[in-house]
Image 1 (tube, rainbow, N blue to C red):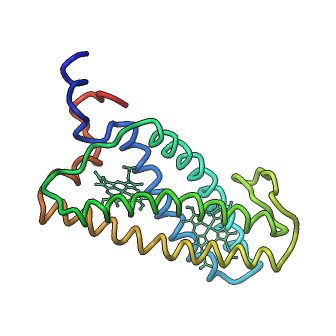
Image 2 (tube, rainbow, N blue to C red):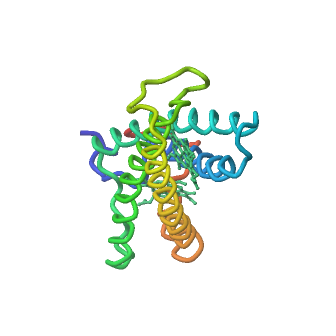
Image 3 (tube, rainbow, N blue to C red):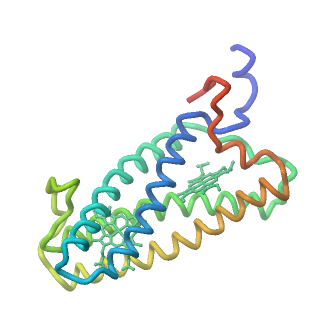
Amino acid sequence: MNAPEMNPPVRYPRRAVALHWIVALLIIALLASGWHMVGIPKNTPERAFFFNLHKSLGIIAALFIAALIVWRMRHEVPALPGSMAKWEKMAAVLNHRLFYVFMVLVTAAGYLTSSFSKYGPKLFGIPLPHWGWEDAALRGDFAMVHGMAALVFTVLIAVHIAAALKHLWLDKDGVFQRMMPNWRKPARDS
Ligand code: HEM
Ligand code: HEM
């Protein structure tokens, strides 16, 4: 065993950092496009454009979310510093676990919303498998679940960002930097 392997990881490896930021940016774009598009008048080219963009970004996000989950199942994450209070550590673990739940829930509910609509799920115009049939009532139910889950997810993201900035500006304990790209040093364990 060489020296670096004897120490626990102190920051997230490059692959995890890359996946985290790709997923984070896609989710922010999905929240923005989702709320924007539902306000656009029906039967307009603009609405069709944003719905297709949203669905395509959602499918791409699903692939990266799957990769993040696989990475997470196969790796230990760096331990939180001992300077953090017990409740803070528990809140961080809960927040991260709920993120995984909501990433899957929101994506699946979005796909189901499209699956029960006449337009169907599409990736940049390419039709994808329907998990349902044309049914306005079911489409409406899944749209409601999708929208409500996206709202709760946004609250969790706001808490997550506030906590990250607390680590950066108040605690100054290096937790923020663990998820930031580190261009200088080569990856040890990605
Ligand atoms: C917007 C969507 C975001 C999602 C879905 C997301 C998701 C996650 C998840 C799932 C983890 C836990 C990784 C694990 O240990 O399993 C994590 C960690 C982290 N995130 Fe985010 N994140 C987002 C945005 C952000 C933003 C905007 C920041 C910075 C301002 C940030 C900073 C961090 C940091 C510093 C950690 C590491 C915490 C630790 O070391 O325990 N995240 N994020
Ligand atoms: C993490 C991923 C996703 C996020 C954060 C997200 C977010 C949103 C948001 C905020 C809305 C507006 C909800 C409202 O107020 O009515 C929305 C609507 C919608 N999303 Fe997503 N979405 C995601 C994934 C997907 C996927 C994968 C699909 C389909 C392939 C999809 C299809 C739709 C559709 C069809 C609507 C319109 C629902 C309606 O007519 O009310 N979304 N999404």
